[in-house]
Amino acid sequence: MSLQLETARLTLRPWTDSDIDAHRELVAERGDGMPSIEHNRRMIEDERAASARTGVALLAVVRRDVGDFIGYCGLTVGRASVDEPEIAYELFRHVHGQGYATEAASAVLDAAIATGRKRLWSTVRPWNVPSFRVLDKLGFERDHVSTDDRGELVWLTRSLP
Image (cartoon, rainbow, N blue to C red):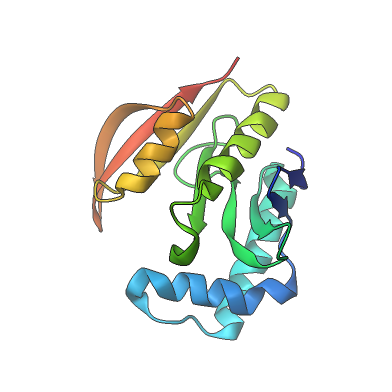
């Protein structure tokens, strides 16, 4: 998978140390508190190591015109596999509703197709209606529902050409 993607409005790129503070704020928006700088640094280092091992990556999403970090998007093994990874994204609430998630995820989808993969997965909590809309636009379909320690998890899939 390409580790640098460009769209009309966004750059998706590997994580840098300069992303640590903004990513901490993004994680804090989930409502579970602000992770420590060291914890967040380890998360980013773990992501870099996973990318080197698997060839897929979650990439920092930056607006091209402003240059600000607004979230992440990419492929991850997550609950899936290297051959059929998950597409994942998370953006700051203040940029929701502007099409950035769809734009970033479309670029990642194209990058996944270029690798020759045959299928992608995504997992979404039932309350996350905006994520379902993004995935619907990208052609994902519901596959099944499972349960984990945080409740229901909806699995969606998309066959690739």
